Length: 103
Image 1 (cartoon, one colour):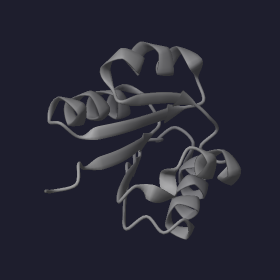
Image 2 (cartoon, rainbow, N blue to C red):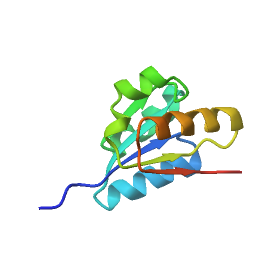
Image 3 (tube, helix red, strand yellow):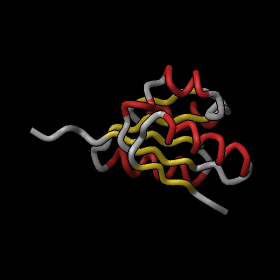
Image 4 (cartoon, rainbow, N blue to C red):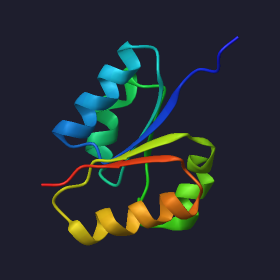
């Protein structure tokens, strides 16, 4: 019996939202995270779990259980510093595959 794939999508702009919904359509369990409640609300019914959180806050990310995911996608392109900080937190948490969108 194979384990269900799980992907954390951090940043729910156009790219992150589209990726999250597409992965969910393919049977992947998706944790979608953004600091903007409107973005989270927009996607909440289309993914496994949608949460409002600051992706640059290590404690918040760890409380969400991101360390249990094999793959995470950092889909933050407007704020380079936030993207780098989030990526560092994910790698330190031991996530094997961290994919980062760059603009």
